[in-house]
Every structure is written in structure tokens, then in C-alpha cells.
Length: 317
Image (cartoon, rainbow, N blue to C red; front, side):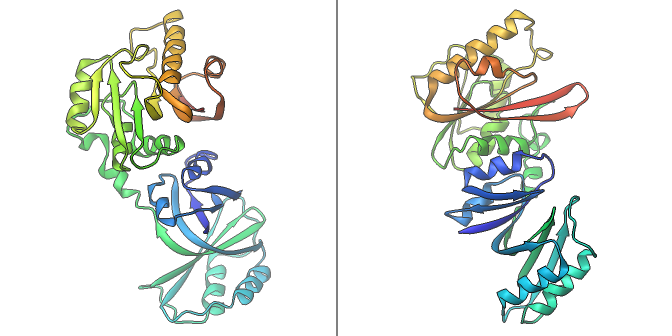
């Protein structure tokens, strides 16, 4: 099924790559994507999407062209409906969002209800195009706040927020019942998101206190104390590896020792990962040159956290 997505503006590229865990992206614009999705229900796992719609059509960013699109579609509904519009920052369409919403209300045949609609039709204007669809679902991002690290049984400062952890799991393209490994699992935030999606989870850490805490957060996960450069796992154990490598500032590792950790841990991740599957690895510095010795680099993203920290996210196969 061809679907239209209104995406988060939190990162220019990550939302599009995340969509690949549920389907194939056909077209993209600012905060907008059209994708072929075999099962629309799978879109509920997405973290960087706001709204999912049945794709109905697109046209140039012009009020007359949009009116023509609506007339060609000749939509009729017996259910109370509302028309909604959003203009992205680069949209060239003249007029206000209200003008677009009025057009939807007048060109669709059926009862309008702005207060209690049973159907919502939405137009997204980005660049020199307008994209139109019928809303199927709105992603409940409040569930991520419910899993805020401070609400967990065990909390440790500096952990990754659930929205990013879910995004990383989605970038790995792991599916329900797959085994997801985090060899630097800390308090288990990444594994918690994988477990929420019905995946089997396995995590290790060198810090005993972190593993004790992770067991409080994830009583059903397979967890243990282990060196990530020598994991107690068979070859090709994991369907996906998702991990945030330790930063030099937070562990007693400096200079050459940090380089050695990158090499040896990536080599070990390669050993325990199934052939042609994905590892998603986060670091505080660009280590693509090292990663390329062990993997093909499918994607690379930078995400600025604050002036002294920029996350580098590598998708490796």
C-alpha cells in the first residue's frame, strides 16, 4: 500500500532511513515521504513520524492546482470529516493554511466536522509540491515519554532517550522475534525499545552496577557482565546489533586504548552478527575509517547534542 508520511523535523535524514524498517521510500521532500508499505500496521513502531496517511495524490504548490487535484479525486464520504493543512518551512505555495483547509472542506462531498471528525484529510506542502492523503494513524509519541529513563526501576544520568533508542532499533531493521544484541548495554535503554517491539534481547556490560540495574529494568532479557571485545556468544548469534560505544570522557580509556577498543569491539560485533544483517553503532567521533575494515557502511548520520557532544550514527552491514 502506498502511504504518505508527515515526518519529525528533529533530523533532516534519520526519519527517511527509519522508514526502511517497514517499507520502501519512493519519494521525499522536507518532512514528507511517500513509501510502499506491505503492512500499514507496522508503521506504529516508528519514532520519527508524526502522521501516517493513505496517499491520494500530489500536485504543484499552487492553490488552483490543489483545487484541481481535489476535483479529480471526487471524494465522497458519509462520515463527518475535517481538512487539515501544514506548510513546511520551504513551501512555495501562496496563501495561508486556512485557505487549503477550506478547499478540502468545499471540494470533498460530505459532512464537515472540525470538532469531532471521523475522518481527516491532510495536505502537506513542501518545496514546490503539495501531498494529499487520508489520515490512517497518528504516532503516539507520548508513549516514549512514559518510558522516560527517570521513570524506570533503575536510572543512571546520561542515558539515551527512548525516541533515539527506538530509532536506532528501527535503523537495524530488526523484526519481531529477532535477537537484538547490545554489547555496551548500560541500563538497557536500547534493549527496552527492542523488547517493546517483541524482539528477543541480549546485553552485556563491563560495569556490574549497570548490569544489576539493567536487570531491574529488563527482567526478561539475557544480560551479563562481559568484555565487548570477547563476548561469550557463538558466531552469527544476533539478528541485529544496536549499541552506543563508550565515550572517552565517561570511561577510563584514552588515546590508543580507545582506538583499540573501537577495532576490537567492531571485529567482535562482526563475528556475532549474522551475514548480511545490520549493526547500528553510535560513537562520539567519526570512526568510519575503522568501521570500514570490518563492515560496509550503509548510512552515516551526525546528531548534535550540545556544544561538546555530537553523536555519530553508523549503519553497518
